[in-house]
Image (cartoon, rainbow, N blue to C red; front, side, top):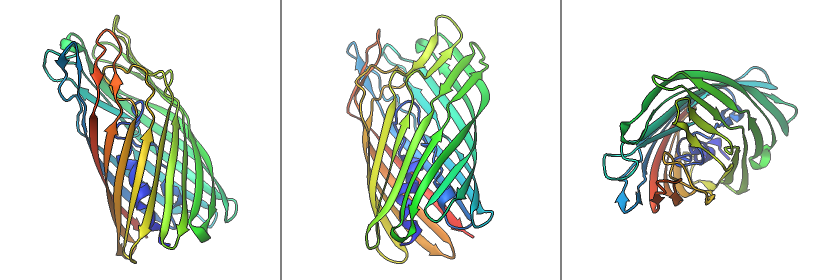
Length: 345
């Protein structure tokens, strides 16, 4: 069973977090460390959300902002037992902009940008068991504008360092792998052009799995737990205070099936789900869970080169924002596309 059948799973890194809980975007993948031999990949994703609501009979207009995701991974075998990988991703992010209108939050906007660099090693204990771990460095910056542009601050970049640790079980004869990975929390203090910003990003646990279920057919998926409860983005200027404050942890599920149709081509289909919490959301994040459907395909170009792509349609969960606005956001969607180039050398 060729490894390029897992292309659908790999593409989740660029398209699954279109509207995930908190401000999750990449899902902090480490799957490159499990590739065979020396390996390099480049991923690109583009997400187009359509998010609108009403309050006091006034429409917000589309507050969703299109954004892109990039990723890079380089993995090499040091010896038969130890491998090392460098992984670059954009783990967290947000972009919201209320157009000029009669909606109470008109003119408000906010964005968060992050860039993560992970250096991770993997040690094979035997053919079935391995452990992995490393260091993750994340930088963050952002901007916030209050409704009516009454207040605005641009926050300079800050950096924090965390760690990643996990273990995996494999059965190569049936293409089975179960990997459990913990990522530590991160804290930032960003100097602003007006008020300063303090922000924390949650600890998380990823469970990634795949297994052959029939000839040339692979079942794959993931479960991600992120401890968003208690996470805040807080401006130091009174009375701004908490720009965003999360009160619920989030669990995100994805499961799919991939099938090899020829020596060169494989395709996959997967579904994703994140349950709605039912609690009011901030005005800069009026979404509450989602359900998604993704189609993916991969083509082996030969000589170790592979190209894969996917498209994901997301039904965004209905949300009500916190008082005093109490906006109602429903029937919203997003479309995401992803592309990956990979090379074994």
